[in-house]
Image 1 (cartoon, helix red, strand yellow):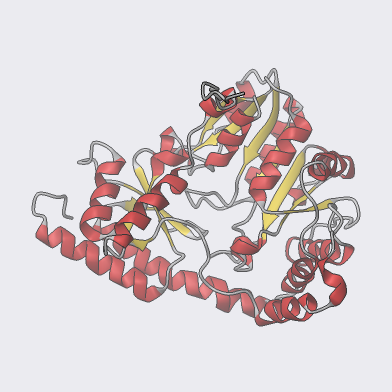
Image 2 (cartoon, rainbow, N blue to C red; image 1 turned 30 degrees about the vertical axis):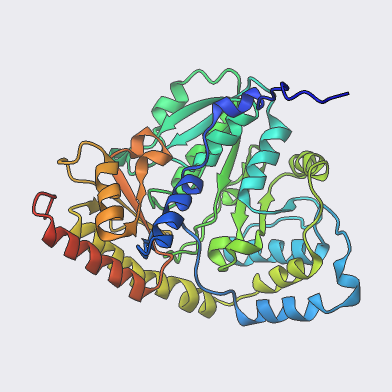
Length: 402
């Protein structure tokens, strides 16, 4: 019998709720430009370009040679890694966690967003998402059938939540509030006062707060965790990641910490979706958690501080203003009023200066007048990006010049 070709398959309806991730689309465009010889300098994505500590790499190389290292691993993570995570929280945050029951290793925070939402939310439940904020909070919530409710972060309030508005809000049906301090993309620092108010809000409203906390070691000597607040484990979880703090973005090692029963619910979801990480990778990650203060200072803070100075000069060349108190691995700046929209600037920089920087609208409507510059490029590349922009400005008299 001859087969017919009239079968029409359609994607799941949930795909109508999201579009392809901005960076996924834009990287394809950058690749085409590079193939055409444009040599684009990317100051857009926050992927650390420096290596992990030598002992981390040495541990991976040693362990991967063990004949017994290559089998399946427990989804819950191996105990040496969870013990290292607990010791790291005790050392840097003065937070006590039971490694056996209050920590779940993750294959990065994106995975954690998926698993936490599946563990706590039913389709139709509401999720509070910051505007501006990490786009995955919104996209994964929509894919999973949740109703996204944005709460504003505004420059006039230092990019901190407006607690008066949140306290007066009807939160019927809200299950999760996503929080991210130190903040991305704005660089607003964490503070115990804000964490305390967030915990109070969660307790008063009966919701779960998840604080996404990967930036506390970048351009910051103050290491804060929402789990430092008394009573926070009853209503809060916290993500942390080795991507930024330990120069390990491609390793995909993170964690979620919190109350034992909450962690058990997340594990129930995770165990039905994936398996445990490669054992040598887990052991190497455990070693990385023992990096001393000198390593963090020299491998992260000092390097990013030098790059931050160049990023500031790029902002100034483009006529953008920024808050110098920002922390983290980006610089967030407001564009001049002469631009109708932010892409008028970012596309000009891309095609005239061959430098890729991020338009703030991808983080939400409150970012539509802002750009974000990544510090994840070497100083020479950043200096070259500055020179390209300055040269393009000098040639284009019709364009904004400071």
